[in-house]
Length: 81
Image (cartoon, helix red, strand yellow):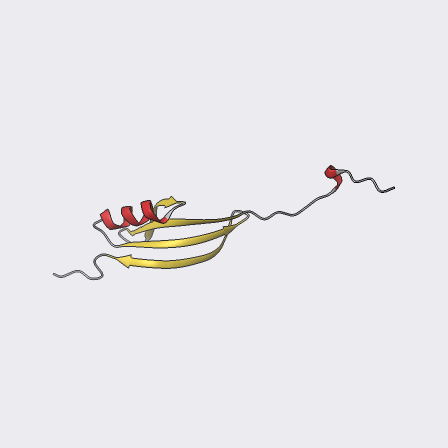
């Protein structure tokens, strides 16, 4: 007879998460403005900004970033003087 105790069985489960991040170019560096689980609010926020922004899709596994994908970069790329 084989007896199985559920608490004795350990399964490693990895938590994967994807989020959409909106970044804006500050005076000298890129700054994270917001992160969303869905594309629609992130895309809407990126469209409303007047400064140069990037919209990224970022994949996390167990709380660590494993992949970053630039979806779009919009806004002024140079200054006219």
